[in-house]
Image (tube, rainbow over all chains, first blue to last red; front, top):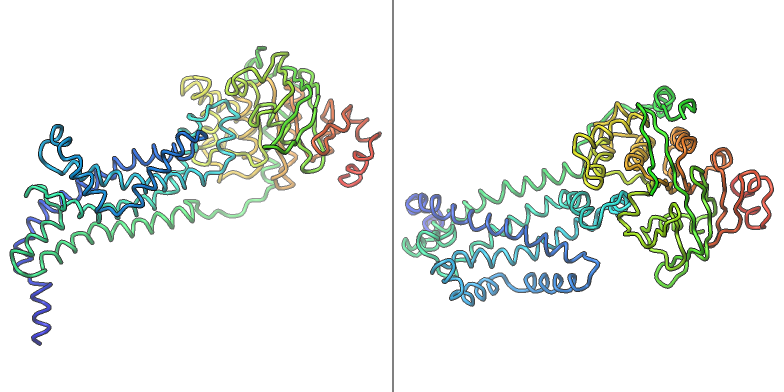
Length: 262
Length: 255
């Protein structure tokens, strides 16, 4: 029983959970969501740029995109965050003030954009080549054909993967604490961690974990829902129709088939 | 540039331009696929291009609107050097219909037709939509304007694709095996539509396996094999009096 008591006290101490809960909710969760959302938005924009460069016919666009992707995908997130957060601290100070918060977001955005760029690229490249050809045959230039027809189709296909990426960003946002955040800027992990140190048990961190799960688990299910819907399509089953019906219809309506009006 | 269509009331006649190919050569990388193809297509006539697979028929069409750049030779559209115009500008004058339709799946039939009118021709959205609706009605799909491609049969999709190309008021229409992917009972509807265009004065280059159509509708039939034009002439000559051994062989296989 001692062991079980210990276990409950260490991980599930209700008192310390209740003490830290308001802070987790009003400070931690808010900051985690702000950091994740901002990084995702910036990551999406940069990722699209990287993806479009990556499939460009020009190697002078492709090669930099490749290097960028390899770099930020290949480095551990914590290393990128520290290098950027501390390396550009002076520079950031003159723009954003002393808080490392913006730099944390930027570092996370750069990492995210490398992954998102690959997701976008895969999606865009999976669109049938005939789509681009049809656009070009209609007189659209490459950029317009991509923007109007090809990219929207590609993006729609990778929506599930993008939600997955957002989940990864939510989790990675905890790494920003390494940069030393102000009290009001602490995200879930840091709030939980500080409280854990104060109370001497891990319950606040467990609660922080629960908060993460509350955000991420519904999203994973959203992904599954998306995925299924995209795979099966929205098409409702219809009763089989005979091709002959169409032939009859066509005979009735097509003015071009009657030679009289030439 | 000749004006291409005049829309009187709701009926449509075309003024197709002439198309001339001189010693056209095309290659994929180092591999030559088209050798010295010369061809003359008079305004308002239909030329059917037949031949075994891999003979370069589709490549030829793609050279005309420069989806694939020719490596040498000349393409003259209405007497103008088509290889000196910007490709985007050239392609606004040449309509193309593909074997697999290549409709935009996220858009309705109406939007498929209207998109380029709006974004390329610079029409207002309402103008573009109105014209698109007329073109769809002309191909017998007025009722299905709001369907997406996946809710249309192959034949209907191809007719949307034809309407989409026609809406741009091209001077020449290229058909790349437009009926090859269709269920047999739906082939006739599309061919009839194409024959109607021909009667109305559109200049057409039609790559096809429908020999009946070629015989009935074409003013000129071109037989290609191994990247060359082997024989060209009136349909009667090609189908009834094939001179080359290759054409005789081909016809004996397909007829």
